[in-house]
Length: 602
Image 1 (cartoon, helix red, strand yellow):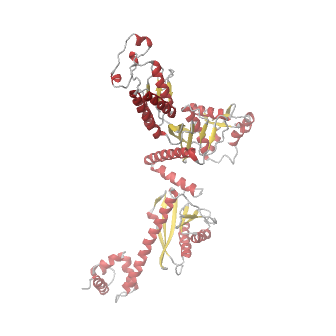
Image 2: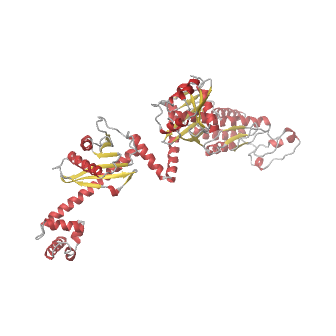
Image 3: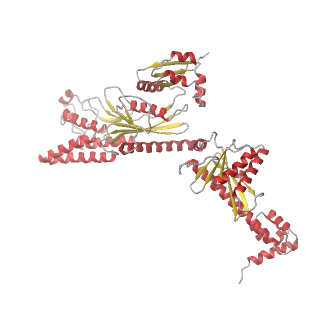
């Protein structure tokens, strides 16, 4: 029998990494902690253990092991490497099935520069990986345009070159290579170019540009205009590249930028590597949640992954919120203004775009995913404790207090369910009393649902402000169901959402999907209410008009309306068709009345 209390006694109050195993001795979870005992113990405290997935994890724990490290940073790094190695069932999954490209500087005489997806430990230098292949090709194109380098795979040893084993190729004739194979270019000159290329790849274009400007001016002073022209071409190319790449001033040197965008089941993290104000690397990854991980936990995991992947040694990391990680060698910055805030905003735009694209892909493949996401978002935004799968919205309609109608529209799974739409002819209210009308409609609707044993909606929306909401709540309390449903009112002027008993309204983002669905419900209720109101008004008007025809009384008028269904059909009916409902004399009188009315006066 697993006794967590006994296990906790063995765990020290030190930083480290803990591992949970199930009954089959399978590693199911890995976590890090500043204080191992406190962190592990928190999983078994009822108040903490509220998430369903966490409860399942805890129920499966049969063994706990741990590794003590010197600092929280070491725990951070060890956790990341262990998760990648073992991929436990309940840990966040890094969804990254791509092999990203690298730029390689080959370990050889007169090194070649090209891109690859395979890393071979042969002493070559690898720069990257590049999350954007287009950015990588832009950099390579710049290098090839600016610096003549060899592309052949000849073994350019000093012995082979001196023996005259090689001849220059077409690349030399085209000016793309300086011909080191025949000693036309010295190794010293070639390596000088490589040093400048390394600076460019590391984002240090400013220093290269300054050096080129000095060499260009010197060449002009020496009247070597051909060399000055070549240097000017390099200078212009690098300036053009820098102007496209620089997003902040060059005083920001060697920083990492991270932002996160979260969903119910997924999170997305964007990384920007900035050197001298230039973004030299960028990538966004997706993380699949397994438990109820916080954004801070997910971002911490992603930071570790990216810094390891890109071999980043940056001393400053720009993040959107504070991270509880103490490391004397790293400074975490949460900028509020200035150039660093612009960088953070740029990263946020990238992660938002990536998230939107991914979600659209998922929802195209599985429409139910979109529905679940929308309902979950609505539940969070409206502070509900259950998904609003069934929503009903009420609206009143009248004309100067006459022909009052209350309409109700129904949405199921965030979509209109038109077969469930209903309207009520007001029975107990005299005159234009919107509050009393709402009270009657709500009471009649849910009295009937309770009598028939129907399931109540999770969300009720009242089109109106505090007055209409109070009237609706009065009926719900009378029925004893006010605590079983969430009820809100929406005021049209500023789209304010009111809750019962809450003095201040809730304002949702104007672009939020939750507000759009509420507006759709409100507008649909208004449209349906107006339609029902017009039908009632037209029927009442026609009934009164029919009674003006000699020989036609109230009973006959009602029969005609019930039989023909619409005003238009009565007007267009022939005398023979009218005889199906009323007698011959009445039918002829009605037919003659409308014929005369429809005949234009000459």
